[in-house]
Length: 192
Image (cartoon, rainbow, N blue to C red; front, top):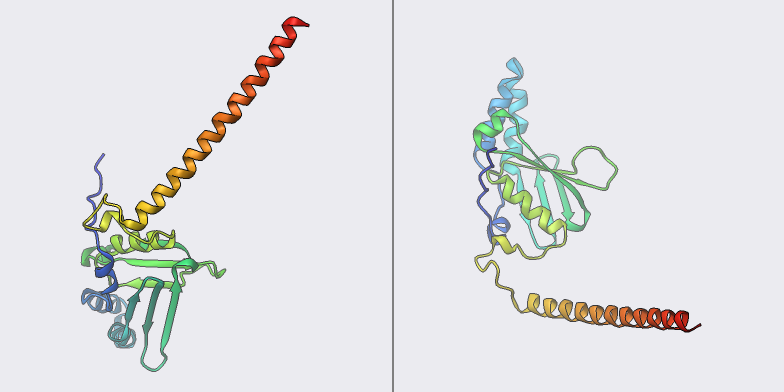
């Protein structure tokens, strides 16, 4: 069984720097328009303007996407609203090294609330979005200091360890008390 090669990791700084789709998305739009046959120009023109006006913004709070000239559309999603993330690509998109990241929210709609397209490293971006969606504020695997906890993580780890030690001590005390009662009952039963 072959394993899929690991996707190159993107740092949060690289992800926050993504603002525009890759040039290969325009190539994809042209190829997709050719399928329309004689209606090619009517399909290509809106896609051309969509490509040239499409902008992304990734922040600590969420992701936003906007596009359009005559009819401007903007979608802002916080990580807390994201319910599910899907990565899809057809044959041509895979050939061009692209994929679409479909982000769904709990809006009740069956279709994606936002579709991020034209990103060559869609796998690492999806993983970043998943980690933020789940509440993780640091990508330990993507940071060059992997395995080294910062002061905040060390403080949290110390606090968790302290709480766990207290819980273990309480459980031991409860077990001793229960064992003591059991011995007392057994001793009463043998003498009575």
